[in-house]
Image 1 (cartoon, rainbow, N blue to C red):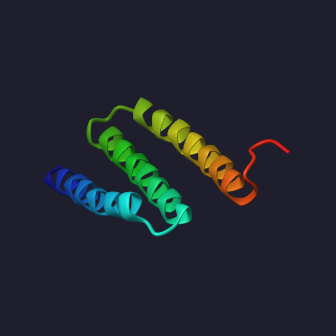
Image 2 (image 1 turned 180 degrees about the vertical axis):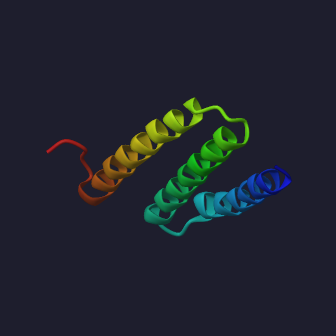
Length: 87
């Protein structure tokens, strides 16, 4: 269990490094990528918490969050490419 807790702390530490890319990113695509990376790390943390505490509903929450993260990334990429969301 100590390993999982250490792994979660490492993920949180690397998330703070990604925040630099979001704030100082040279382009909107870098910022979008940073937000997507934070979303992915959040999914991994949710799965680890569900495994460590033996709570299966965390896996469902992680799956839902992954779907929302993917849809948001596609919408933002489409907006950045064309300037409009609906065509």
